[in-house]
Length: 294
Image (cartoon, rainbow, N blue to C red; front, side, top):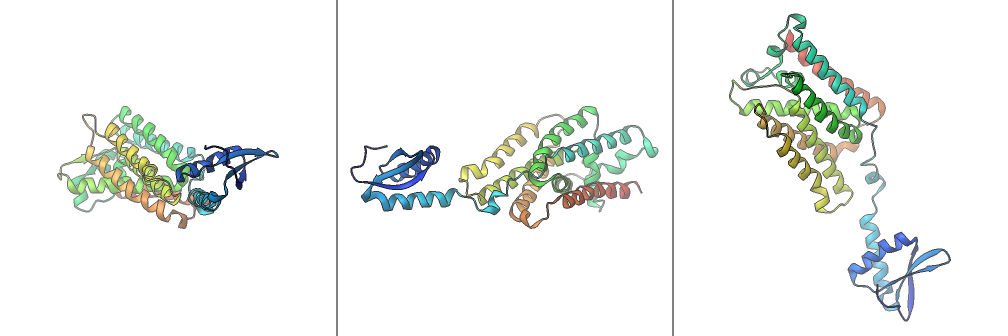
């Protein structure tokens, strides 16, 4: 702040915190000002010659930082997200038991694995069923833990139903793309493709919504940059890691997350809609397995 103005003009009246914040805009514009306390309130005063410019700067600052009502809804929590996580963990656990206990004459692995050659021949359902197969308990637990964590965030911003059907669609899309570019003998199983699809969905959704909130470019792309770092750290190590499947799932998630961020306001997100999406996710997986086993 500069020295006390000789001819003072009051340009703003509010709390100390708000006046201090508005003063930052004046500092950036090089306008000298003072904050004074008067009758329990705080006021910003400037010299009379700067009054018009100061009011203009404060008005511009308010327009840039005040979100519209629709913007304020963009990050409202759509529930706790735990229902979707419990459903996800339950489905994967059930499929693991069925796969390893040879229930229904066995054949779950052979019927559901993402065999690139068979997918090339039109067996698209393998891209879905493979998401629910795991080689061992360690493989299962890691996908439940990491998938549950990112799925929890997805469920909070999208709602559990919409989040998990989106994760399944993006994960299956990643498996399809992975099979398309790999050798016909390539085999892939596991929910990790969907897990990294979830990373992509959340990151892209957050980035698009931050554009609506007029955030800085750095703030807009921070979620995507963070997701890429996590992908490089978690998705590219390990002897049996299908790196390209993880990348394909992540890219599919980015695309779907961007679409949800841009057009998500047009999708019903009430409790009934979320229940419909959740049932749809389970039904989609069930249909894929029905085709695979019959």
